[in-house]
Image 1 (cartoon, helix red, strand yellow):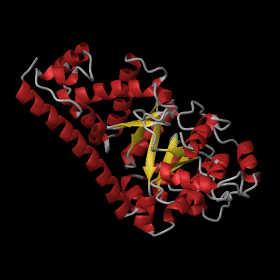
Image 2 (cartoon, rainbow, N blue to C red; image 1 turned 180 degrees about the vertical axis):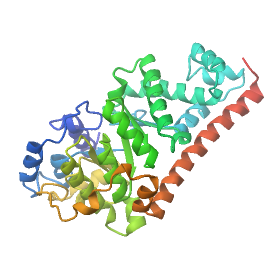
Image 3 (cartoon, one colour; image 1 turned 135 degrees about the vertical axis):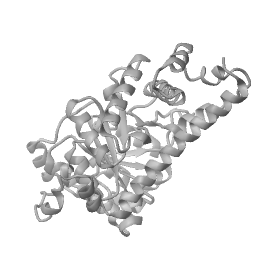
Image 4 (cartoon, rainbow, N blue to C red; image 1 turned 180 degrees about the horizontal axis):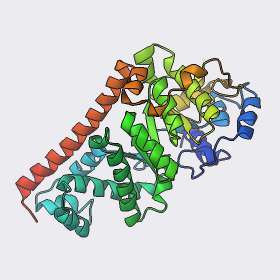
Length: 369
């Protein structure tokens, strides 16, 4: 195992364990904690830039996967329609169609999907296989298993809530202990999606992550008390100009501190070591191993996210309520960001259609069991 990988893994399981991805803690950001954070020094800490990031937050190596032979545990894993299609395609099937799913579903589960009224056969297969895959991965990762919600519910608040509850029940039935703590539902930043996040989080039903690339979505996600708010740094830079992503991460962190909820701020799609170093102080910075290795060779860096007394000079721009209606949210986000969200939903929908089409082809060519 490389030194960089070892350092990243230590950050996930060491003194900052309560802050790592997958931690069961739901401790809120209290006034006392905000004051303590504000009083922290912002000077460089440790012997390298990587150690600085891990001192003030956590650098997470996204290059690690449960299937890796490195011996290092993966911090997290993701289950979605595309990953399940890949799993089903990993072997050839020449017998009855049931053989195509027995590697991913039990015979009882397959039979139940065949008989489920009002539930598309391949939707049932996809959901059940996803629950089984999440159960498998839950025992192989140090953190949480991220489960993508279905595209058909992107603009259906009630549908999203019911689907997440259904998946939690499925996961529990196949052996996931405390699935509401082990699974993290990735929910699109639509108006209905954010409303569903607020309901699920307020009840303690499920943990949710909202991926964002603009201020309006950050505000709404933090106000909804999402367990994590993931800022897509590269996407924000592409939409709003170089440096916008890093600025949004800092703003998201400040917003979370002001609101005092449990939202953790995660920086993703970070494409250089320079950008990663500029994100020191974020709760989590998701990085490929190549950037982690480069950070391990760089001198320590100062904390630039958090660590300062929050100011109120931009409070007017931070007060957009999620209950202002879909039109208000989309207007605040802007047409380009709204279009990007819809493109993400469409991509997930296409993956789901491809899964169903693949299963239909198997069914037609192999025959029913």
